[in-house]
Image 1 (cartoon, rainbow, N blue to C red):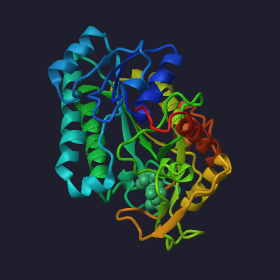
Image 2 (cartoon, rainbow, N blue to C red):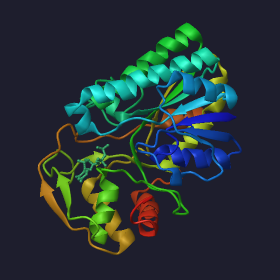
Image 3 (tube, helix red, strand yellow):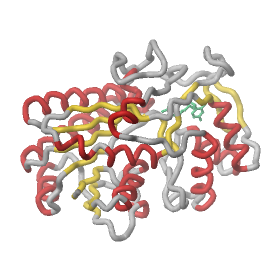
Length: 328
Ligand code: UDP
């Protein structure tokens, strides 16, 4: 398939580009390189440096490249910033995505794969989370993703757009060969910060909250390998052949892992101590989030190749060891 990967130079997008190549597809990338990295892409990949909200530019790419399916990874994803600067999130994550979708419909491209998030569930009442769990985001980031999910439903109904929305849990890890991986600036995610604390590149890790109602008092999350996430995006292709298909899938391993367990995994994999201090809870952090992904397993034949936190952290460690400064 000819695939336009929007945000393909970012963390999850760049891993998906490699998976697409490995599966024999033809990816081209649209990325404005605000957060993406050219070096995350093979030199053979065509990169269009443009904004996803630029309908004229997108329309031309869709036609020139004979695009059949669009994958959309590009979004702002800092929860705290979304609370302090919501317009930035609504304009980039919602308004720009609507422009992208309008350009697609104008060009007759009607297959779409969207990166959504477990943040659309807010603070769930029941765990593990299933796709039919109520969605009640507690921050503008999660709301912006839910707004797009709702727009997609309307477009499927009105125009026969077929789409799949993947609600990611905690994307983690790096390509197994250590050539690409996670490189955010600023970095706020637990695993890269714990690795940098272990190597001394950053100060001691702060654990945000040790008084949660969880077995060890720290938050539980569902860490899922970025290549496992990526492969689901390709496994869904046959389902998009049905016009108007409106598909929603959780992607997680289903294993809750605490902050302290992540620290232990980094220590085990690296053979170093992770210095840490305890800090107050971070605003907007639910105590526990983990997925029931059996729908993706059942309907897409999705398999998790990295079920355990040690294996996931090992790939992240290999990447950070090989490229301590990321792509710089
Ligand atoms: N966390 C932490 N210290 C940090 C960064 C994260 O204790 O410096 C915790 C955070 O409170 C959450 C978990 O680690 O419980 C995962 O956070 P991350 O930001 O990686 O992902 P999120 O779950 O927010 O998407």
